[in-house]
Image (cartoon, rainbow, N blue to C red; front, side, top):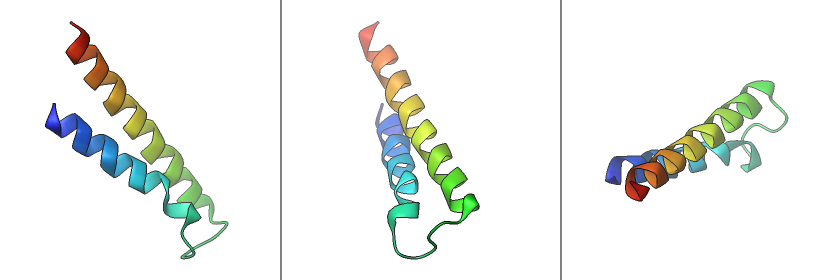
Length: 53
């Protein structure tokens, strides 16, 4: 359970990378953001599934 929360937290921060003023407008950072967001959503979804039953 804690591992899923950690993965969701890390994925959420990876998703915020394009909004940081490091590299704006890069396709690679946009793809990394989308991947991080997908990882966060999947981790939270699997956490919800494991706690519901």
